Length: 392
Image: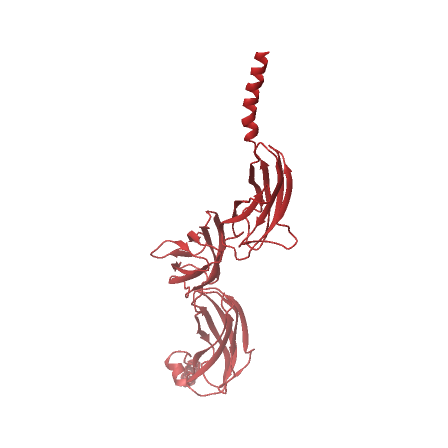
């Protein structure tokens, strides 16, 4: 009997401290939030796990979200969640739909809530929410290049702007020159910028050599860009920079041959139209203007079309010369476009030399007429022959 009574006393003594120390202990943890990271100007859904890790019931458990900038709750969203009784080792799930300010700064931001098990004593809890712009954009604002002439150097300036909400770092810009007729001049084709604050603009410059065999046309140069945002996210993209290679056309007209040597005669002139420039000529027409010194006996305009660099074409005009001037200017109008479709309209003058009869003989343009002398000699021989025969 005494043994049973002693055992009961020992058991009661062991249980009494346990009952005396029983209490509710609440733990609130973040299960997830979507999207992660949160984005400025968007909503996020926050899911919380509320668990009683104590040894007693939480009889009047209330959780209240107290958002502050950059977080807001819509009027339809209730900040207070009344869980009520939460037994030991039990949990409850709650969620909030939270709006993120459009001008929220990238990085970690705190979201505050508090909870109570009796309505009198409140405990504060802070939850970390990472905000990150969906696209930390480094924008090409504009670019400009100097005259790009084959065999010459040209400069390229590119203005960039950090349009992200926070700083960008380790910015690398590289021109891909593998498939275009350009080469870096006295430097590499790559530029680096260590740091750019939000909204900051900077200009990078490249010196390029236009290769001598570059055709006159626009070239798209890939610009490879890589950088990191404030939370260590790496971005890579490719933009395109256009540089137009061009050179001034150079066309000459030479008089190749002519059957018009003296006045008051008709004949034909042949001209060589030569492309001495570095650019292709397109839609070329050559027109000979009317003049009082001659009459046009053929169409005044001749269409040549395309003319490659270091190439030529011949054209013919029929004229009647009605002037005794020693030199007659032939005025031609050339209309064409270069390989970049830039229109040109220019005039060329070719002088046509007219000779007198004396000059024609002097320069052996015509041969002496010896037939009359031959006839006279033949007649003299015949007369002498008959006279001699008659006498004999």
